Image (cartoon, rainbow, N blue to C red; front, side, top):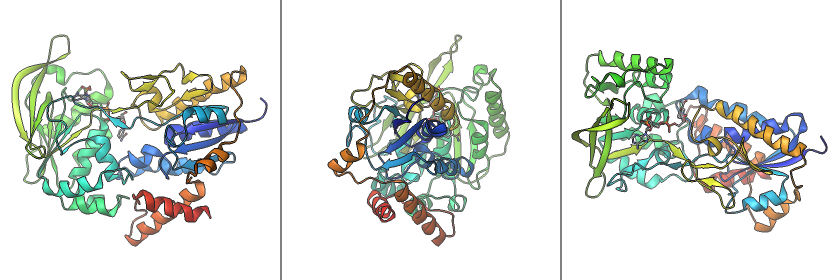
Length: 440
Ligand code: NAP
């Protein structure tokens, strides 16, 4: 191979960082990793639950990628806004899109727009200290509520319910920002409901994550038995699902205690949301399996008092101008990660929101293989290499690795004041200002 390729990676989450690492290996390419935030690592920082310390520690592995020669972080730059995809393509030999799936799916039921009904991405962003989170809403609203519900039987639903259910002591060692922990500590939740339209055997959560719900200090899991006489709700051939079923069965045998309760409702789906100023009632219907295994309504309807409803029914990718996009799937149109020669995708924007962090490594490597095959076949146009000129011309305030390191240090120093490893700084202007000190 001739001179190293120049590649732009859009998004510094796991798939972007794994794609960059693969390109750097053997000096195949120099890589600029763009992110719209002044901080790298995407969902590892703003999605993985703060109390999942071992999964969060993936950050340290990703951070070491910055130490390799040939890679730069170009943070605080939004592709599609500050710089277009076409401009990137002009300046680089190839562009890899790894900007994930950041939008929520809607339930499509009446009343869903009422205040108090939010997507999991919004709530997760808030408790992880994302700069774009709607702090004002969560911090004024959450202390006023007593009943919350989460729709969905996936790992994100489990994260959301667990963070709502944990005591301040259980969250003490996390890097949750001070304003978030204060709000969570002031909440007076008596009931949290998890609403799943199918049964324990069909849930997509993983057993380790599910079990954690049964280990909470104060909040007790109670399984709603309605509908669970339907055998199909319990039957599965998959080992992981069978383990989940066993966990749920175990909970059904436990005696009920006083105190806050986490209700697990299976074969239950929301059909409308009502309230005068904000959500106050969620109407749910009981479902059942038909002989063919699809879902049908039983006609039984129930009103649950709920002031905070979190939709956790999957994330969705959004398109970028000039990039072929499939609205149905919320993913780019590609073959083996190749949108067209010179333009590639990896991670959730390529395959949809599924899998664990490690899944993105394999996925990114496969995409890089397509890129290198095109380079080998002479199908890439050589970029101008003049991106720094464009950035300067636009007056963009870029955050580099040095800026990120300054933020990293500031967060560790802040954490030390609270006796913890790190405390997340969430304010965008503060982050950029700290980074600018590191750039000098
Ligand atoms: P998910 O696993 O796809 O779960 C989505 C849930 O929403 C499913 O239970 C689905 O039920 C339900 N749902 C979809 N549409 C619905 C509707 N209209 N009404 C009611 N329910 C509906 O997605 P996720 O929880 O957002 O997780 C995304 C990915 O991140 C997953 O791969 C997950 O494992 C991963 N993740 C991992 C961790 C971890 O490892 N600790 C933590 C967080 C996320 P049906 O099955 O009936 O469609």
